[in-house]
Structure formats: structure tokens, C-alpha cells
Length: 350
Ligand code: AMP
Ligand code: TRP
Image (cartoon, rainbow, N blue to C red; front, side):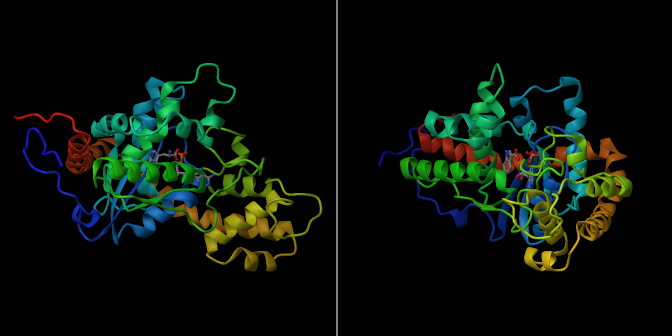
């Protein structure tokens, strides 16, 4: 084994458990690309909130990721603050979790480069999110292609154990694990290999108007999406107008009956009951829709209240994000230094 040229120390194999305290480390992120919706809430936020007391949590507004498709420079900063306010509105407690903005911690971009040099063109080409987002676009940004390396950097910088995300991020998490294991094998133990945490119900909430497509911030009609901040009338109207089918029978069959199955799955996620039990309680679409609308209104009401509180003081929000960035950078800089040393980059003497 060759000792490090500057420190003169032999690289010591490190075990994951020595990187941070015994608490499980959690990391996740959301792009500031528009109004957050029920899919974000059920797929991601609810899990974040549920684990915030027993885990050491880092949640990030991933603004660098949002540059991989066209964006409006005049709106990005406000959207970033607003997305952070929505994290808190969803129920995160500012004194329990570390909340920050990705571009405030420069280690993310630097680590992404190291990881780009440990992931292959073929692997990135197989990413379905890339294929979907690139389809039909004239000029595809190189950053859209290398996006998963930046996401892996986000996760690996914090020695993350668990990454709570919706089902659409599974493939990116698999790639992150592969890259971490490959790096550890090639350069010595450096990264914790993280696990995805995907919820059992509503891991992929579908569009209410086009139930074979996932609910999304940017695609589909506004009627197909329930926003986190929708009021009772909007929620009720969108659920009432949700596409079902003509046979009128309530049963869970995502292939044959995607519309009603989506409603059943949302109801199961909201009440915590197994989806088959929910389905057995209803004979008619009308009563399922009425109960679901009521349950969603009740679930979202406190979110809107908290949003009013946190969005009314952008200065305070910015302060919180500053403190979060300092805390995040203290962790990220150590991991980055470890990765650079492992790859053999010449360290600085001063
Ligand atoms: P994004 O809006 O793409 O930045 O996604 C942020 C988080 O929400 C990620 O964890 C996604 O997996 C999750 N998410 C986004 N859309 C959905 C959806 N329709 N159903 C469930 N989870 C979703
Ligand atoms: N790619 C994720 C999405 O679109 C956002 C994201 C970026 C993320 N970095 C992350 C999620 C790290 C979890 C962990 O939803």
C-alpha cells in the first residue's frame, strides 16, 4: 500500500459506523421547479416528517438539478425559498432537521465530478428519467445526462443510510449504490452505501386526469394534480372530476382500472388501511370520491396553515437556510476530502 504523498499516512480502511453518530442518517431532496403536489407529499414528505425525531436528517432544495431543464432565472431564487417553506409546511421542524440549498454547499458540484469519473456512459444512458425527459427535446443539456451523478453526490456526501423518495427515484438510488460500492472496491472504504426508503402505498401517485401517468409538477393538466396548498373547494372539485371508468365497479386493478385504483391507493395512504380493505368498503365511485375528498381536505389543512406561517417571513427562512448550509458544509467537506484523498489527488499543505 502506498502512503499518501502529503499526509504521509497510510490510508486507513474506514467503517461506515465511524463516520457519524449511532443515529440513522437520512438525506433527501426536491427540485425547486414548481408547486409541490400530493405525489411529493405522499411519496416523500410524509416519510421525511415521520422519521425526523429518531434520525439525523438533511433535507435539501436541489437547485442545481433544476438547471438541467429550461428555467426562469428571475424566478428561481423565490421558488427555492418557497420550496423550503413547503418542506416546513409539510411538517418538518426547523430545530430538528438540517435544511439547506444545494448550491450553497459547493462540495456537491465538486463531488459530482469525482463520481462522473466513476460512472459509465452506458449506465447513465439506461436511466429512464433521462430518456423520458430527453425525449422530444431538441438540445438536451449535458447536465440532464449527468444528473444522477450529482444526485449520488448529494447522498454520499452525508454518509447517508436512508433516502426517503417516491418510486420514480428507485433507479437513481440503485445507481448511487453501485457507484458507492465500486468506489469503495477500487479506492478503499470511503462511502456509506445508502438504501432507498419507498412508501408502501402511494409511492407513485398518478395524474387524476391521465391515470397512466404519474402526477407531476410540470406535465399534465392542473385538474390532474392536487397541489399541497389547494383549498377545500379545489381538492373536492379535482377529486370529483377525477377520471374513472364506465363499468362503475369499485375494485383495485391498476392495469384494467387505473383511475379508480389510483383513488383507492391514495385513500389507503391517507388512512393507513390496506388498499383491499378500502376497496371492500365501497360500492360506488361517488361515495369513495366524497370520502377521499374529505380525508384529503383534512390532511392538507394544517399544511396550508403552516405554509402561511413560514412563507410570511422570507428573511427568517433565508437565515435558517444559511445555518443549514453551514452545518451541511461541515459534514460534506470531510467526505469530499476523504474521496479526493482516496482517488489520489494531491492534497494542499496549508
Ligand atoms: P420532484 O418533484 O421530481 O423533485 O420529486 C421530489 C420527490 O417527490 C421525490 O422523492 C419523488 O420520488 C417524489 N414524487 C414526485 N412525484 C411523485 C408521484 N407522482 N408520486 C409519488 N412520489 C412522487
Ligand atoms: N432526483 C430527485 C427528484 O427529481 C431529486 C433529488 C436530487 C434527490 N438529489 C437527491 C432525491 C438526493 C433524493 C436524494 O425527485
